[in-house]
Length: 464
Figure 1: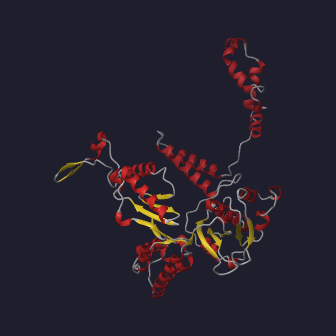
Figure 2: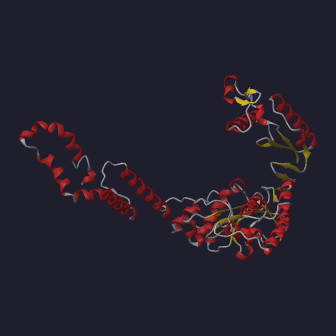
């Protein structure tokens, strides 16, 4: 596959501004007032306008992918790539899109695109990125340590970073005083060499025809998964058949929500499988030979061929329903051999994002936040009243807050019926229209007719 890469030059300046709107871009200089005739750099809407225009121009062009101003095209041969490039250059020229000749890459097997190096078989960080890691100075304060972590996180898709970055993790804690020891300095220089070497391997391009394995793991701290494909000739279908037989295609992890951290182990492992399937759905949906590897053996009975009617745990039932759209075979891999997903789950990098399941009770901390919100609202109402006696207001707020802290129950129609029947005032109010009114009030009966209808048990059966 031959790849061609182009880069648009001064792209925003190729978007003209309407004549009647150009005065909005006027600015003052020592030489007088000037205004933009094209979209200015730094204007919030320039990027949206540029991308919309560029996408509309190339919408009918096939075999290409665009990232803002970078475009990568592919063809089966150099001849096809030549005519493809000619068509692309003609299309851009006719629509006022200027290309940078210094960044033009034509019919190459390996190209640099959007900060990545794309080869025939894999994707890895670019050489410039690896040089930035190699030449990164030794951190002297907390800002330098955070910059080091931020740089490594940009290439986290290509290697498992938890093992190499663990010695520096304590530096990011707000309660920890920055102290760069000799041990950390030695680990810093050694980790740079190992990280660069692992990043050079990169991640393999996904091949739908190969056997695919999705290894997952759950811990109290997070969820992690590895998407791998088989490249060896081993007869075994497990991802531990040999050291280099399975190549990495995608890595992912995230922190657990407080509710998810309290799941039972079998529920947490099922959650990890559902999360991994959802995150890799563009690869595994319709996959004919998909394996799901987990280190929790009891989960095999739940996610294999067990009927939904045989699952009593409502949470497990909801999680299994979310896996019915995928076709896979789940297998057990011992924890000592499931090192990649285990490290990703114990040292997650993504933000917590709870998977909401139908029928679950609201989260406890959500109720606490709701109570605090109501308390603030009641307090603010007291501040805007004309009554100067704040003692009763304070007691009202305290009483209302205590009531909100109680267990919140659902009010049903049967509870309303019972409360209505036990209220003597309300019962007398219903019976009075039925017994009739005194003669002096007969003239007002017609005016009370709507109230009689509204309160009559026939028209208000929930009151009975």
